[in-house]
Image: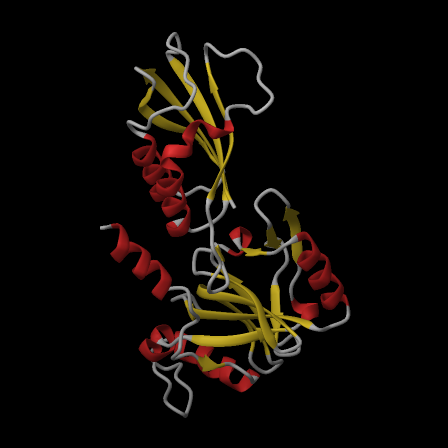
Amino acid sequence: MLLPLIALVAAAQVPPRDATALTTDVQVRDICAALKGPGGEPSPGLARAQALSRTWQVRVPANGFGLGRYREAEQELELDGGRALRALDGALTLDLAGVDEVAFRASAAEAKQWAAAKQGGKLALTVYFRPSGERCAGHAAARIFRMEGSPLWWQLELDGGPAAAADEEGLPVDKPGTARGFRVDKVVLDSDLPRPDAGKDRLTAVQGALDRCAQSARRRGSLVVSFAVQDGHVRNPQVIMDAARDEDTARCVSQALSGAALADASASASRGTASLAIQ
């Protein structure tokens, strides 16, 4: 079942192909009129069902969004969810679900580069979304609208080209061809004396299985696994800390570790913990 799941995840890592570009306040007026339902449809005849089912694409300029904190351990740059998204020269304010959970994959150098580009007006945010069933706020005569919606794709663009993306849940999307694996930071047994290598090589036998879990993970992050030790093997592994916030990956790691032979395990060991990181 693992390969079909990986294929499904990979197939989802692209922006919607059927999106309609939202480039004028007239289009926004028509959508808002359609959302009012019977009696509120504009003359072009955009129906409420059409407005709700269609995928819209809008470009938010550098001054219309904010960047948040940089999480160095996960190499993720957050979108500033506390700042409203403003597009179309301020005519449209977007309230999108989950905006405070969006992050983009970025090295420290890229995060600095994008922040500088944003200050120079060269960084933009393109959002793909569907309007919600709520009416638009604002004033049509003043050409000022506020619309709620559900995001389908987030994309940072530098000098007109894609720089990073996040999916409908705001999770960072890795660039095609990016290889990921699990780094073993520490494996400590309750019988251990302090050791300089922190037991990093104790899970060598299952490194391949762990790396396969990392390849299907939706985001990077660290995990801490607690387990019992029996006859030098891992028993009943349980993820007790999951910074990647990914239940499928946590389950995959538990399955990969179950029964694993521990290199250099003391015969008196009964419990242990492993600190891992998707990189």
